[in-house]
Length: 164
Image (cartoon, rainbow, N blue to C red):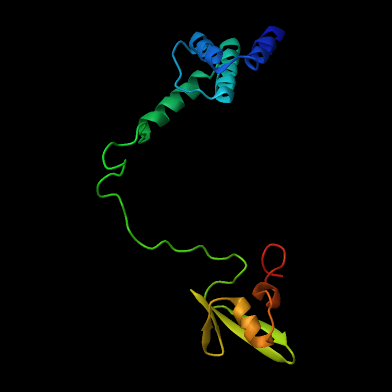
């Protein structure tokens, strides 16, 4: 980049939004809807550099035009009932995300505790221990030990990156 171009780009940092909008018109020949100072600075700097160095290649421009023709692009949201399109709204339950520290439902978590083995089956919604369903591993740890434990720590699932 030549020194005069660098100075011109540096000068953009000192301009107000109104001055940047005027400069945008000079560089691109059209008005901008943006009032974001940082965006305008970057966009004008790109335009100035593209003008100096030749911009995009003819091949890149053809490919961009090809992609634009193939895409289903909507610039403005549809009018109507607050933008909702008829027949597109789906009502239903959203599946909660699976905690990555836990194995998938159906797996059995075991731990040796005071000479015995504690075995817990992971369910879709909760955990099964000795025929009873619990909402959390912490509840099972409390039932086993009689004191409060973090369930993930008790069963050794709290290590770095998930299982330890």
